[in-house]
Length: 211
Image (cartoon, rainbow, N blue to C red; front, side, top):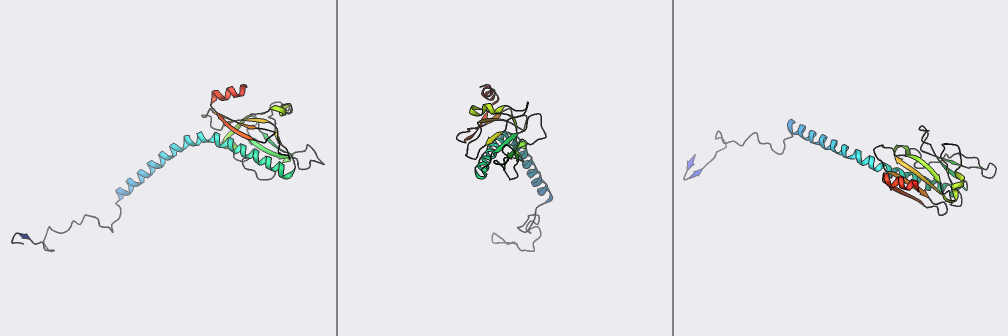
């Protein structure tokens, strides 16, 4: 109805009702919107997994070398606390079924000197070390070099003493991922007990080994 230049809209007028297709605040999502949302989430999840894989392979060497250093420091503490010698033994490359590192100690140094047994305590690094790195070599250096003689092909153990000292040693480790050509060296100062970890590029590592 039009009167005096004014349009008067009555609720019952046909064709002038509010659009029924427009969703109000009480409505939900349509099937198409849910499918699109799920597709986007799956795409983002796949991208995250693809980005995480190379990062994990890149971090394995550094994390594994640090875990090995933590294990060595724990053995220092066990030797000081128990008053017994503690040894860390590394599996050779030929012995792929053995753990990367195992810990033994001398429980009866007075009555059974030189008799080492597996250490039964819980030490970080002995179980999952092989998942990150593999030990390629262990060299006793400095004053400890004459102690390196042993069975052919076997890697010399590193011994920690109750007074806080230990063998001088270098432990050469590689990533468990063959695509990572870098190497790490864990160095042990037998006099001060300092344990230092250094990562090397492949060419730098070869130079360091040749020294």
